[in-house]
Amino acid sequence: QVQLVESGGGLVQAGGSLRLSCAASGRTFSTYTMGWFRQAPGKEREFVATMRWSGSSTYYTDSVKGRFTISRDNAKNTVYLQMNSLKPEDTAVYYCAGRKYGGLSYYVAEYDYWGQGTQVTVSS
Image (cartoon, rainbow, N blue to C red):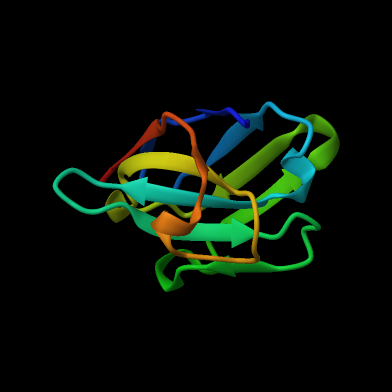
């Protein structure tokens, strides 16, 4: 069993930056594919970024490419999402997710573990 706890959200002006962290419990974290998703009010949860356990492969949704970076530190059982050049449309609750088996995925249903989410609000 893996538990995920996000932190680092907050209120930031457009053009600013935030770094989200996701701390994982469980000895097998280092073998999981990890992902970040977000959900804005009234909208479905959507994919943001994903990374394989080795860190060798990453994938981003088009709207964040060049602005967001996913990374992980397996020694610390932590995955990060560095968000730069934030826009008001990035406002959402951001969720960390872990996929026990399989490679990169942008499907919500293919992730086995979820954090509670952290709010990111970008003001214009």
